[in-house]
Length: 188
Image 1: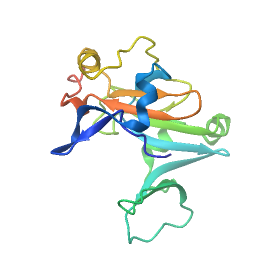
Image 2: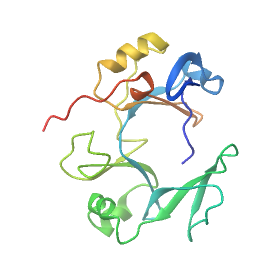
Image 3: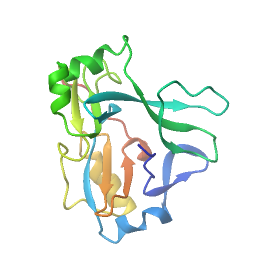
């Protein structure tokens, strides 16, 4: 899974934040192209040929793991992004799929693993589960697409952020954290 670009340029003084300047590679978002969907706060996974893979980053100069499936390479940092098969310590991934038969029935594609032991559970789930990035996500057809209005809109939602999907496959994102906001407190 390639890194998804942010719809706004990063603040050079705080790379976790954005400024009111459109990222040129995401100009299509501001032309009202694409659909806005919910960005879940978990960890990315890949289902391919009935097998589950977890996301893996390999830093410049580090050895590439056996079986690594490269999805993207960042020329600026030398980092490689891709997938590796699960190992014996990946309990939460295995809990989410329940059985090997369940895994074989899942369509190939990328998923978000969410649940009680993932990222301190911002999604407030009681069990671990996989959310299909293309099928099982909430859509927001009338989301505003300007810097100020989008910041206000996100402040009223208890979500991590948005991913915009273009019909040609391009994606772009924005998060509450990019505006300096945090998720709402847990409900349990």
